[in-house]
Image (cartoon, rainbow, N blue to C red; front, side, top):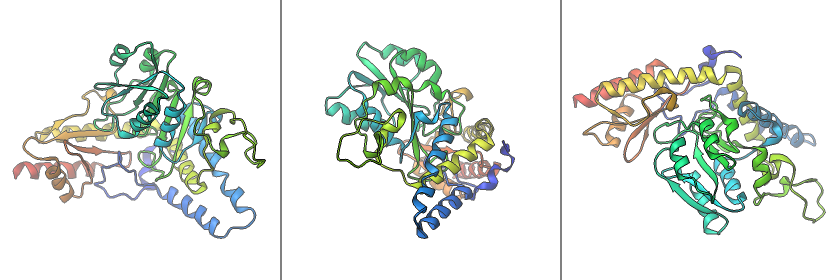
Length: 368
């Protein structure tokens, strides 16, 4: 591992960029990998497609290492939502328990499956704490689907404790707000999905789905396409059986350009180390929380470090979120603005200068 010392040198985002929970500007490494793949495709010959397709197993291998599983349990996806649809339409029966207020990507797949009568749907109020989930479980619940990190507040789910509470049911985890920046028990999930455009900084149309043996036994490959079957290269107009492992959830060949971007981004995370990235983010998040509180802001994110990831959501009494966001933008800060709060999200490339910008902006707002 190279350590965090040179991590920021791979990126070019402005100093005040604090919107990683929405989009993580990709590294120069990713830009170069994408450009090389596109350039190769523009000079195509009889070897080009096969050469470009080698990025897929490379990305799968890196994803498997970071997720604590094997390549046979991983398949590339163009985004987290596609993986969640596989889970929702693959669940053959029973009821799924989903926290209310989840990001819509972890709601619509289950709603669509329920509308077609494949499963039932029940919502859970509040954060998906082990006690709350345990209290809501009934015999008809066959799966629980949660976010590893809450998109509003940065609340970090205790995946290991949830695994114990859920028992033999399937645990589905949307990891998009935590994978690659938080040392979480990813092996606790039966279905792990993530997209690469946020914290992984791999840009859009990147992501993967990782499944446990339990999930492979129970989920039906309802949305399997022509690449998700055995002997996919044999075009005999006959229904082929699903491929072994996670490959059965493949719909079609992934973009080799996107696969190259994802592989490059994941390998950078590996070289630096998740723990080193996480420590830096924890430090910046703590500084941002202190800054918000120092000017009278109300922090909505968890107070305990172990219960939060890279997000700081807050309000300023007497100032609408759009007004707060405007003050931040005047000082070169890029936040996320919601109807009820402002969200800041820091990465391992975020410098102390970004915290200083937030402090100056909020002080100026208070003086007004």
